[in-house]
Structure formats: structure tokens, C-alpha cells
Image (cartoon, rainbow, N blue to C red; front, side, top):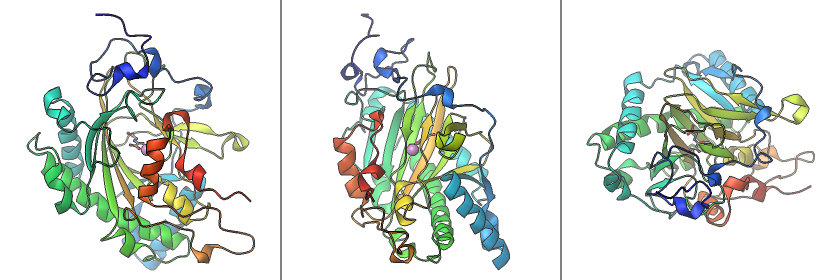
Length: 361
Ligand code: OGA
Ligand code: NI
């Protein structure tokens, strides 16, 4: 076989990507430019990230106030926190990870039924970010599908592995309930009240499940699983089987920032503040910039559940958070607006949706 080391991105379209074929080397188009990805910014492997016991949201008024204060601090500093005592059974988490892994182990023919580059498709299998299109490629394979309301979408999901729909469906339902609880705490922490978004995120809200697989990579120093980006959701709840997630701490080193490695602790879920909570808070909370690093031996699986308003429902800055010192800092936008952005822009080169929403002083 001809060596494809120097081949351009278009050689590695889905179905033919280096990661799907387990190539024993990393082609050049997977190499992340050093200017874009300063690796030495990572200065610690054992950094602590905020961890919050959210069972106390259901406790006494004092306990709830305490958790809300912890959430406020985490959203202001990192735009990220981990949650424990979230109430989802370990077996539901384990089953979801196992069945997701099972999907990626299926023969190509089975996975390719869902292959699509259409960002509007409610179910799609693809690789990288936009495979074969973006200048830089990423060592990732994923299945993305809508998940709420479940009965509207579940019949479109894979039927193979046979338990896929049941196990992922259960996970999606439980995580969605959790997302509403957390969003209630977030809006409360902003002084907007617990129900500020409950009807718009409840029945009419969107849930998109990104089921990610990062196969072992022959050169994890060269390639990435996902480039630095923020999520376009209100919040994302993430489950992983192995470490690999890193978040950017904007406040470190007098504002020059640093990468923080997120440890893996069984049963712990991660919460990312997405672009739409940054807008909701008028910039007080920051959507977290995060990336995925790779592993030479093991396959990493992650389930990222993105929760947002309905497809065309626009998130705008609440008037309660605007005054003379705090003018409106962001334009309003919807999930659909984000999809339009995704089609036209290259996230792999650092383009961010949130930057298009900022109103300059
Ligand atoms: C994502 C994402 C992180 C991970 O899907 O947006 O950031 O750990 N995933 O896979
Ligand atoms: Ni993400």
C-alpha cells in the first residue's frame, strides 16, 4: 500500500479515516500546528477541578443555597465542574458506555448505514470534526443523534448492538432530568429564579447525544481527539471511561491560562458550561474551552449529552442582568444558528460561535 503520511485531509474521508483503519502512523494532516496548540501550557497532571455534591440541591434551604454558591464559583472560574451523588445508578452508566463501545466494534458495513456529513441529520456517523473537509483532522469517530423527546427519535437510532436503544435511551432520560435540575440551579445562581428556563428547556428543549470513540493512536503527541473548542449547548453532561479530557483555565498565570487535566473517577459526571449559558449570564459565566488528548493503547469512549433550548428558540441576555455598568454583551442566537455557523466555519482552526455573538464595547 502506498504510504499516505503526507496525504491531505481529503484522503481521509469517513469510512477511510486513519483512525477507522488503525493506521500504524499519524498522517501529517492530523498534526496539530504548534502555534495553535501550545502544549507546554499544560503544567500539572493532578490539578483539582471543582467537584460538587448535587444531592444537596434537594436538601434544606441552607444546603441548596450552599450548592448554588459552589456552582456559581465554578461557573465563574472554570465554566466546568464535576458532580457526585447525582442519583444515576452506576449500572446505567456502565451499560451506556459498554453498548456505545459495542457500536464502534461493529463491522464497517453496519456503522456506515448512518454515515453522513449533513450537520442537520438527526442521526449521523462520522469522523474527526468535519472529515476530509477541515484542514486538520482529529483522531475521533462518533455517532451523534437527537435524544429528546425520545419517542420521536429513538426509532432512528442503531438497532445494533441489540441493546443500544434501551441502554442509551435510559442514560439519555436520566441525564436529561439531571440537566434540568442543574439548569434550575444555574439560573437561580444568576438571580433569575429556578424556573427561568424550565419550560423552554423542559418539554421543548433539545438534547443531542454525541457518542465519541477515540481509538488508540500510534503517536498521541502529534494528534488530538478533539481540538480546543467550547460547546454550543447551555450545558453538556459528559461521561467517559478513561482520562483524556482537558479544560482550559482562563484565569491561571495572570490571564495567559493553562490546560488542566480532568481525572477520571468512576461514577463522576462532568458538566461543561456551554456558549448559551455564557450568553444567559451576559458573560459572567464562561463557556469552558476543552480538548481531548489521545492514548496509545486504549480506546476511549465518551458520551456527551448537550442540552439546549428548542431548535429555533433564541437565547438572549435577560434584562435583569443588564444595567448601566453591564450593557448587553451578546447577540441572541438559536441552536439552528449554530448549525449554520458549523457549516461555514472550521472549528479545527479555532473559529468559535460565541465570538460571532459578542457585541464590542
Ligand atoms: C464534545 C466533547 C469531549 C470528550 O463531544 O463536544 O468535547 O471527552 N467531547 O469526548
Ligand atoms: Ni465539547
